[in-house]
Image 1 (cartoon, helix red, strand yellow):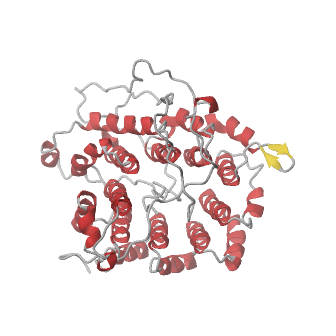
Image 2 (cartoon, one colour):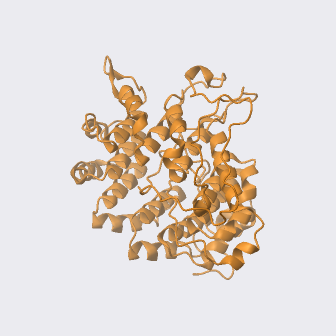
Length: 448
């Protein structure tokens, strides 16, 4: 299982911290133009949104929503037409998170009944995301249907409903969430229910989340850490600091470092931990006592992805020197994570007059599609709703702002079902994280 997961487990929202100010002296040592790096990162996500692999397209949509917001609205609308549920799900959640009203008519059509208890949107998980997006834009005509789906036979659907009910922010959701929690036996659904209750202000749920950070399975601990990050408090900070101790698995430590960064409490130790995990994941994983001395490529990829996301949350300017080369990384999730982190760190350098990103037409597929595998939890992890950021003028006004151009020959069109890659999978299956749980790491000189 890949713990980079959804950029869900990418599960996550980038919070810009204080300035970019380790100072001008720090910036002078870095030979990367910040405006060009920002444009490179946005271009990377734009091209990832038409990748032949539907999982990469879904990750790209999530990253765009967290960084560029409404500027990439046309890409989200294109995603609603994708033939893969994983991409439609990510697109509907993105539209709901940023309240992109130009897509409201499309969402309303997807929620309409088609007869025989069927809907225009056949996948229940996508339907839940559509209801969430419509609710966020003031259309509550389908919101009551979530109550019934919270008791669906499929655990992935129950988890998805629990997630969106927490993100809607409605206090009326506390009773049904608590009622479901009393009956729920699936760990992945229970964690999501507790997280949503915590987001709605239930103080008892914070105690339960803290207990979940100590569970046996690494993936469950990562979800609990994500939840602690989304409910900022002094208690969350203390728990995340404990999770960075060397006795915990590398994935848990790196995820906790990113959580501290998002809360504004990451220190030099957290930053160096993430750098080491990104640049030498094999050594970091082997040092953990339970590794057995062997590391699979999937495990290394997962740790690199987590470290890349955490560096974006820690938000140190000098990290761009490490992140920018990753825009060419052969590992798709790492490439997207690097672009997302760069866009977050370099937001003060965003060109003030950048044109909205239009969807590209996919190129012919020359290789088989990477098939999504059955997940142990939903792709989209809860993220924190933030208001659109105020545009900050570039630091060097003398440098002309580059406008993202569609390369010659690319036709700017919205993707239709006919323009999708021709290779068909045997069946549609939902998204998941990419790598199995790993054991713990001992590093010398670390915090305990």
